[in-house]
Image 1 (cartoon, helix red, strand yellow):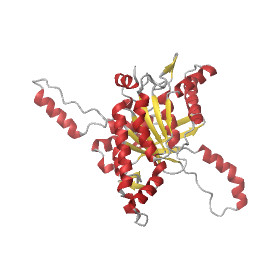
Image 2: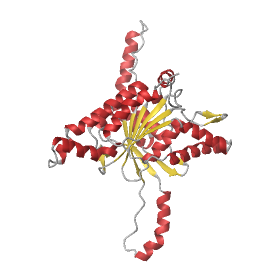
Image 3: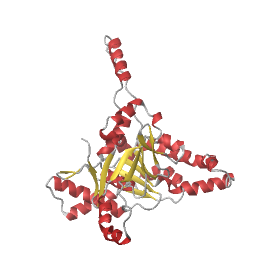
Image 4: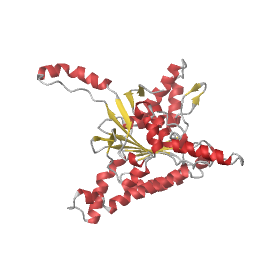
Length: 369
């Protein structure tokens, strides 16, 4: 059975949870917002008008696959750690013998644009995930079997490391022929493709702007004109077009990590981070999530160098114990449907969440039920 056929016959991966409950609830607010008062009135009127003919209520259009951007507001914000977690859950099987692992049993395609994605870190997170489940259920998986389980799951992770935008686009165009090749050239033929992940989406940003400026002769023109450079914009139009085609073939979720360039601000009394990529990308995204490390108070004023030196180790331990926060980016929320805004406001803490990064993976803090 080909990968594409198995994907069509199994549950659509984009409709399945990512395995990180706070993020899943945010995505659900965008994909399945609560029924508004106007919709409820329409349903009531329809039922009243057509109850004699027993006509069915018009069905909603099929929802497009999700496109998620996880942006780091600061350095070491935890965005890549979230990506590790989501990929590990996607790769692991749903169960192993009598132990339910909460995995998806999917294949994953990863574009590591900065070449910083660590397979060792992913391996440790997968191992920690399974070990934690076994510990909670008072079950055990022998160490050799656990190593084999994780190694087998990792064979379904397909990593690509293009070095520039043109290489990224060329790889995107050729991946379908690789994944759907007959006879198959990989081990994921019988698995649906659950995620296309892009690590460090803006890795080529400055390189693209420089090349676009050189092509259009904008080396001395102001920043605003450079941002609207047609050569620069066309690269992102091509990227979005290729990703749309990819999603059309595989119905997979797209997750991209990115770094923020602007300070955190406020929009309609909600936290927001101004995106730095062209609107064609921003309009393509279903939801944008921002993550950041929780701040540790600075040394108080008037402390001597000797006092600071004595407290250095204690402060470092406090930094290590600090957690991370995530929240939906409200920038551009004026374009959301009112039902989406109501759905997010209806979540506990307004859809924000906290987590800690440990050696074994991610631990949710104060997770709403």
